[in-house]
Length: 232
Image (tube, rainbow, N blue to C red; front, side, top):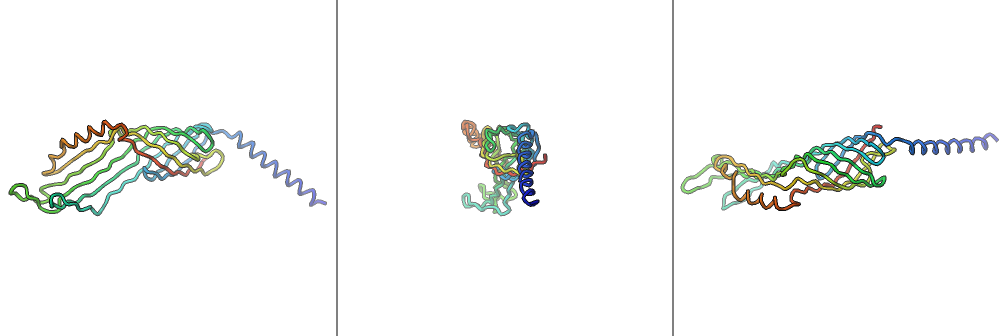
């Protein structure tokens, strides 16, 4: 007889616990803080997200990726071998505001202090004849060509799926697509020794003029996967 009494009491307690948890979650304030990690076309990153309400969150983070090639590419220019060493650096400091249209769908906007820079260093590997004079590689010097942003502080906009901070759980995942606009790209050329004169090359100035006339030339696409852990 006691077993039959125990079963409905247990079911009542279980049901009451679920109902209480649901009411608590519904009344839970939206304010909270989470730490997270991300992997994107800006590199690997960390971030801190603060939920101001259940629909608005502020996110600050840092992402970075850089690659320097230890083995240069060998390229022939007029029968002279040159070592070409590429180098790329992306990422930066981000500050975003996330607006949730639905529980798992949000729009985001903000700014990026970008560290974007892509380029290559060109260096001769053998002597070069200029007129009747033979110059050694160290006398010729090296030439560095870089692609840089017109402005390092760039606006950002995107759309995301999932959440950057969970409403009522510890873990949250998000997938985000967006882009930031750095104005236009700028080509910079710096040389040493005999190649120093190429720094003010007229062809570089013409390239920069063309790039400045292309409104979308400074757009950098962002595809991001994120994971966050809610602290409170």
